[in-house]
Image (cartoon, rainbow, N blue to C red; front, side, top):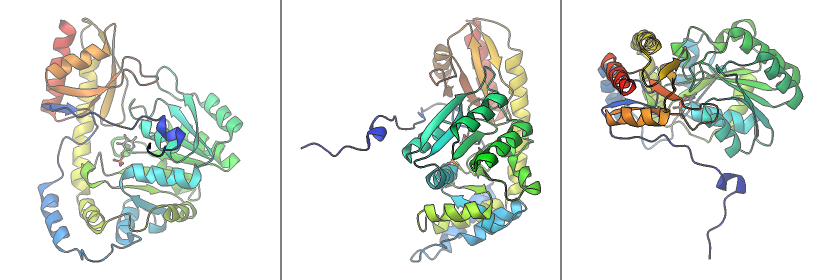
Length: 363
Ligand SMILES: *Cc1c(COP(=O)(O)O)cnc(C)c1O
């Protein structure tokens, strides 16, 4: 007897994975190199001690949504919280994408098309140009012609670091409005950028737009699995029907509230990392031409995409690894030929990376 078959579209999929290796300098998953403040870690012990573990958690996570709403000058009925922004995206795609068309602009975060396919959406992909910018005319035409239900953007984009201009975002919004679709902007790196689609709500609170955020990057809490979105209450209402009952456990709700007390520490980390990002960018841009010439793209996030022109990214990745520096190998990802992505770490880690890369380039 053989095991039952999964859906045929699931069977042909590869599962998402981000290989972890035991190295000294880990710059491959865009996490914060700094832990959250020790005061927060200490507060988490109190959080755990004060939970009624025999009771179900607050189903609507009202306190947490209230605090998140305050942070973004909005109201709790416009906030959906979930287990990481991946669950937020899954909820959006379940409620608005299943059995319908979802548009992505590649290369972008692989989970967008992956989750869309898992929930049974028909994914229509379009390509960005050679510098990973969106061709606005072509994008608007595509939306007009294919009439998707959801259009996905990621700004700053992972893994390119490119931020879409506010013109791109507002034009895309007009286009989805015309066809009754939803624009979903993934702002996992929004705190590192000077620009946010959230500003649109100030003028147009009922815009067909959801903006997702996460605790996994700027908040240095990837281990907590907390993400949220801001959107019109009518949309948040539908999303609440899709999430499982009690999906946010009691510890997570209260730990997230505790984490939000350390917003100043978050901003200090972000400032430190964006300053380091500029330093690493300059160093990469001025790396002398050796066995390869480094091409870099300006980033609005906590990582930088680079390409060793004239060399092999695959080899560079391995030679960095030999020096105990792990970066993300994107060389085989569609549209990212010969590219590597390096997360901004502590100044010491960034120096280790730059020294190792210089060595590899000089051989
Ligand atoms: C890291 C990342 C996320 C984060 O997902 P979580 O589930 O919140 O950890 C979401 N979107 C993008 C583009 C990312 O790079």
